[in-house]
Image 1 (cartoon, one colour):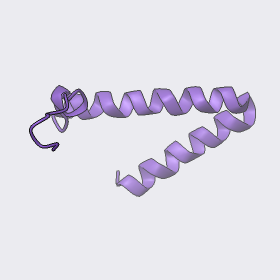
Image 2 (cartoon, one colour):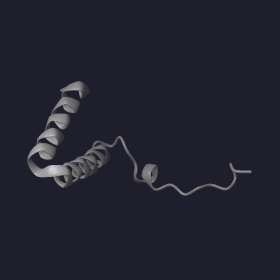
Image 3 (cartoon, one colour):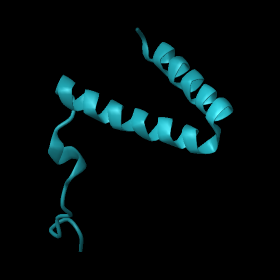
Image 4 (tube, rainbow, N blue to C red):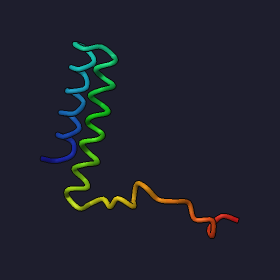
Length: 62
């Protein structure tokens, strides 16, 4: 499945959640979708934990 189809399905899901459940349901579905996306990237090996939780290095800032 290509990314355009995934985006279409996600958009339709968010639209249904917003229409039938209101704005709160829309936000809940969007937040859970983002969490699921990040978890999937971790499980696929495309994302490392250090990519999200990185400290600021003071060497590069002057």
